[in-house]
Length: 318
Image 1 (tube, rainbow, N blue to C red):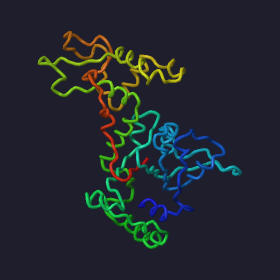
Image 2 (cartoon, rainbow, N blue to C red):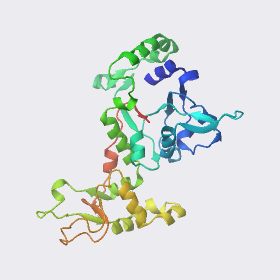
Image 3 (cartoon, rainbow, N blue to C red):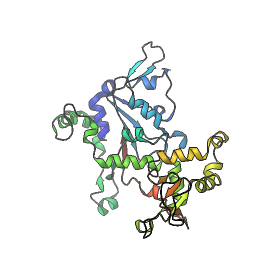
Image 4 (cartoon, rainbow, N blue to C red):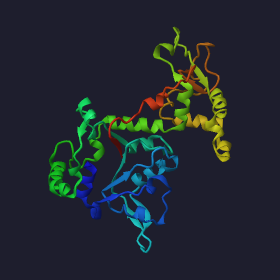
């Protein structure tokens, strides 16, 4: 609702626009592209979530990087010659469940994403309202009406320009973002990494007291060769396209671990750490402080536990 009031303030015919989902989920084409052209000099773009569970509608991180890392795109409407589309906007993606995303989850994506969870749910359910009056609040549909927006938009603007810690000259929006929004965004990107999700389903991280012996030697080490052999025996690999299978190799797996948000700190090249089993340096590349899960059970893997959205919805800013 707050975003609707903000869009009304900026005006859909002026500085705000409802972003077309294809701009996030499909390759951005140059030339005649009215969806991309609609972003020209806008200051605020709101996207709605893709269909939940639809991997075909996953957010392409390369698109996000292009929309937020460049000052312009080559895009025009069908009968227009001018294709100099200037990108000035803050982009917001509203969602009830964080969507799937594909692409590089490294530093370039982490710098761009902020995750803002909304833990309050507005409802008409009397039982929910009685159970937790902080988490559940009464729904007021009248606030979505056009007359409500018209009545309050001046007060909304006054708040934005006068309230402390909301706006200041020479400051950007990210200056006011709490650190938790960056951490949650990083966890969201990590959860959407297929390698992390698979690895944490098959292996568990050791507790601090399990990590080294009395002599300081590493007690648990999984070699890259073991991981690769397990990976290629399972559906995550066998369900790949043949072209992707041909590209998969120990070198690619090593590169992926070295860049992985969650696992890169555990990856060790050969001859870097001393192992308790041999008292010598590790002869192969691999990951320390992990061991094979004995029983997978029905529990969510650690990657899934790290992030759930409780409440009405969440939104991303990028």
